[in-house]
Image 1: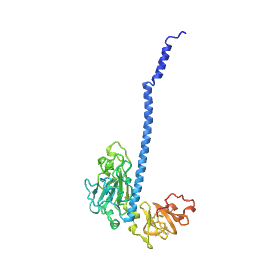
Image 2: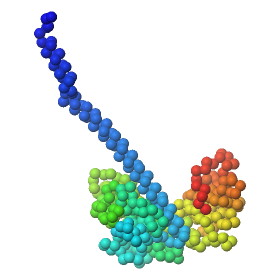
Image 3: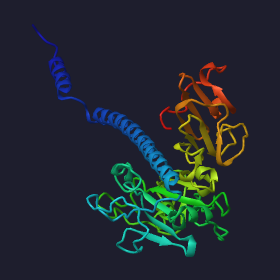
Amino acid sequence: MAHEPGLGMISMKKNFRHLAGYTLVELAVVLGVMGLITGSILSVATTRKESQNFTNINTHYDAIEDAIQRYVIKYGYLPCPASNKLAENTASFGRSDCATAAGAGTGFAESGAGTDIVRIGVVPTRTLGLPDSYMYDPWNDRIDFAVIKSLTTSSAAFNAYTTALTTGVIKIVDYNGNQVTNASADTVVSYILISHGKDTKGAYNRLGTLVTACNAAAKDGENCNNDVIFRDTSIANSTTAANYYDDYVRWKEKARWLGGTTTPAASFTVAGDGFLVAGGAGDHCVGKTSDGTVWCWGYGAAGQTGNGSGTDQHSPVQVSGLSGIVEGDANDIGGCALKKDGTIWCWGGWANNAPVIDLLSATPMIPLICCYINSF
């Protein structure tokens, strides 16, 4: 059968093109699309990772602050930092230490003078009864801990401490360097926790080795230059080094310890009974005596002290109408307690600021989300 000239060759060329794959233009388009998809996936993964890191460091901070609070409740003063130089297999690793002279190679730095010296090291996890892992941030570096040294010696010194410095001792500034705290009875910053973030500048690793030198010119350089000024601001992933900030910090004012009480919780007794104590983020505390009554002290603006006063209490007051309490717990706005008859009673913010309310008979019913009923 006769064929039209040239058709067979055209058909063969088409088939050959099909078998050979994409043209350079088509391949470029495909690779471009794949690049966009891959970039989007990586961007989402990075965002999720950063979000998880934020969650993890805050979980660590919650545990550390809870441990510090319990330390203050027991002893009446704050712990000292631990050395950032010691390895985990060292006996003094993670131990509170204000005796070792600060200086190069010691793992400690100090700034200030007289009774206003700030001592800088890392979280004393073993002194606080925390696992060693709580010394490290999500980037596997040690979390710094800076504290006013006068608040670490005794309960008497802690309670009596004041400063004549009109600009504060530990000074917290914002992104632009404006001070956000000032010296007064309510705004003396007692300590600060610092994670140096993913750029690791100023951070010490598990071996006690400086990972990356502090860049004093950057925004987060304020948190690793060993002075008394610290920056607390939002993450700024700027490409300009001087504007970069990726630290995670948390700090607490002295007056927020037990609501600024002037008596150490460890010395409180009521009718000869000692307290089993729960805490409310350092703002107030709750204790149960052996006779089944519950007592509170500290901040009371939201009814946290349970006596209906709505005011701060600097010594224990009895939670109104509660007896036969088996166990309970508290957080920063109130508390809940379990009675022998199985009813659960709450006060403060969890009871709509009422002195005490039966949780299950409340109208509308209050969900039991405030507490784990097992702390006191």
